[in-house]
Image (tube, rainbow, N blue to C red; front, side):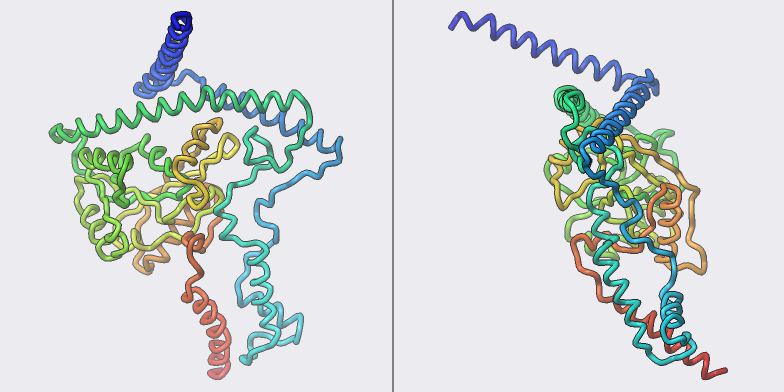
Length: 425
């Protein structure tokens, strides 16, 4: 038994040295530079090195696939069906011209009109714009992570060794470093916000214009990304556990708007609380993600109109993650929070671009839905995202009858409207 004591002492010493080195690296290269806004240029070198490795690995896979006659998978960026941006009326006109030769001046129902709806239905089944927004974005290149492995086959020993080395780096170095950073950051957040809550108001809390910051939503860390560049009041549901501890600590330093589970469904209560917050010019702007769910970083889906009804100035923000280094999208229906955090912390890096757009206000001839769509279009255009009218809640719910009725009304209005115009003439 005594012979094992030196070995145990060696293990303890090595463990102590490893922890010391880890926290020293964390303090010297991450925490202190972040506090003083200093950069050593390590991140740029790291990103450039990764991109060169990804490029080499992709070229090696493509060359190996050609040598072994393996088909190369190419993702459809804009869908498997090419669609022109035309309206219902224009397409039905074209169908009638090519078929019976009649135009929409004829008010009667034409049997050929059915083909438009049949084609749209088949296109939707084959190329569902909603469902594919809740699966991981597929890359054309391989980033040595398992999710982009459509083209991966055993090519060479060098490529396999490189992948194995990448696994060791991500799980044995990056993962412990990020866990330590997360633990340190949460501890500092809880401690710092608690201390700030007991400090008297100073110049930092001088009155500022009320407003609402809205952004597209890909990941829970969207909040952290934006909070690193400004100060916001959060809106959300009250949670328990670790999230509840963080929420209670945050509310001591800033008047966030937290709702009980039963209150979230009360639309009028939510609007009232948001209006009261915005009207108090001493409070921070509210940060809201109007989509209500995480989208896979390729699109912007329907904005809920609630935050656009209260008459406040809206500050749009577009967020676009670079999927080459890691997938930031949280597929909540597939992964729990712990699994998601593990995938995030074992990725190469999380890289994103953030654009702060000019403030926007609701125009006199706009309703809340039109205003929300205008803001959504601006965010999609700036972030290079697909602008969709679909509700993100469709990943858990069926299509509402109101949407189907809207299409029916549009078609009937087109028929009846032309008939009325013809009668008047």
